[in-house]
Length: 155
Image 1 (cartoon, rainbow, N blue to C red):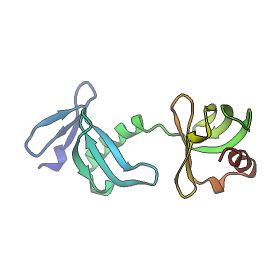
Image 2 (cartoon, rainbow, N blue to C red):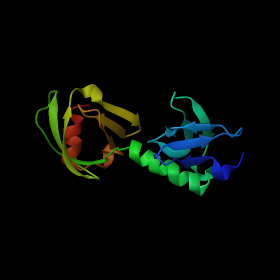
Image 3 (cartoon, helix red, strand yellow):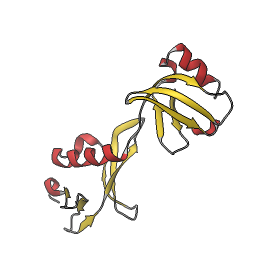
């Protein structure tokens, strides 16, 4: 298998995987094995049916040309703002409106229920808003005092 031509993009912007037999899989997409806790620990290349056609056990093993394509694709798919501060909540019952500051600027989210706050690992939390967007708190213990107090009312 010629590693330098493993992945390419066609004229329509689709990612194409060329397997060892030379078969072209059009419209593939990368998926991280552990996107939050270990983003460099492994990436699968999936076909349009959701089947894995290639596995990279470590991002460091991916040739640079393919890694650039994979990172472009992941950036488009993995929009996950990081919550840096919770400034206000409308009520301590759900549903509630949260005013937050993220690494991408201030915003307002609607929390449907306490089950929308999930612990991923250790003090890492994933919060899903009512529109299905995911927001990450990398380490809840590192939030400011007000943010921690507001968050604790929902956990």
